[in-house]
Image 1 (cartoon, rainbow, N blue to C red):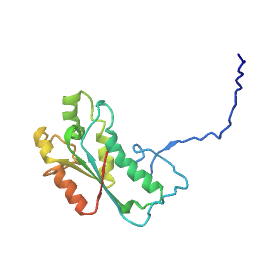
Image 2 (image 1 turned 30 degrees about the horizontal axis):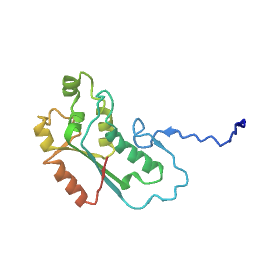
Image 3 (image 1 turned 90 degrees about the vertical axis):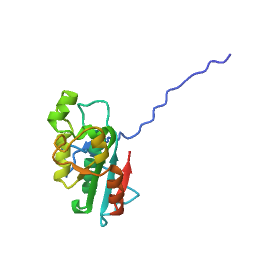
Image 4 (image 1 turned 180 degrees about the vertical axis):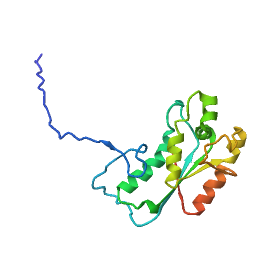
Amino acid sequence: MKNIRFTSIFIVMPLLIFAQKKGAVISNYGKTYEVSSPDFKTDLQSDLKVVFDVGRTFEDNTKVNPLFNTAARYLNMHVDAGVSHEKLKVALVIHGSAAYDILNNAKYQEKYKVDNPNADLIAALSEKGVQIILCGQTAAYRQITKEDALPEIKFALSAMTALVQLQNENYRLINF
């Protein structure tokens, strides 16, 4: 039998560092990465109207719903890429289990025994013009009143109604 000898070969590659950065619109949320020289260019002239369909929450009730954070990321990355903030139109349509993530602190405390970690993000999004819309059907089913919700929340007849109306206004649907 022949002796097989293995030789180590080292390939030196440049070290790439991808660092997250804070955004220009909502600095405490929605961190992004810089993408240098993208092949698919971002349209800096057109309105970028988007509606996020948010119908679920996550198991850790002490953390921000990452789907809400996506709206902050959307604003931050587009402004960082050169899109004027005025050209960004964003809405969140909330239904299903995500409805509990818009409760005011008193109701959230009652349910989860902690302050609502989404409250600051929702306030920041609303301050930057994001519409935050709760499905009225979900609210009724889960017995969430306007008094139970954070003050930035708008109630709609249903998530379906809000989604259709926003899409009729040329908002593009993003559903994760």
